[in-house]
Length: 71
Image 1: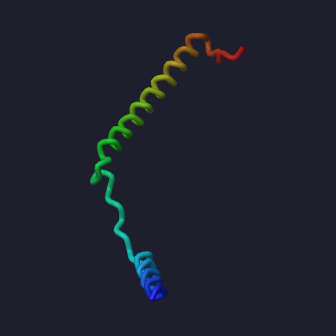
Image 2 (image 1 turned 90 degrees about the vertical axis):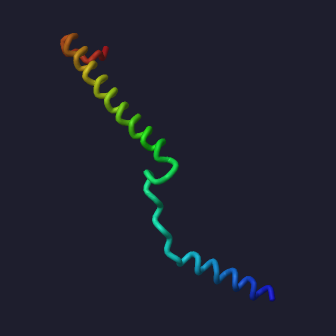
Image 3 (image 1 turned 180 degrees about the horizontal axis):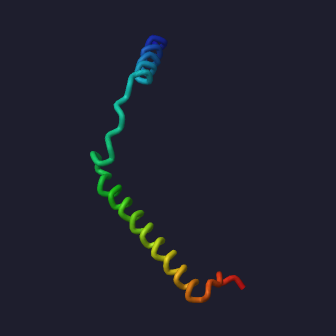
């Protein structure tokens, strides 16, 4: 009796493992869409800030006569 139960459970697990799964939905279709948009916006802002900082460093180095600041 127990062996039949184990066999039935094993068969159901194997069948579940072999079945095809639906692909996950796009992020825009989930509850995380707002968080993902905020994260993308933050990355965009970070890129802008880094670019402005690079330009400022270059301007400072040019104003100092091109020295790299290494002593």
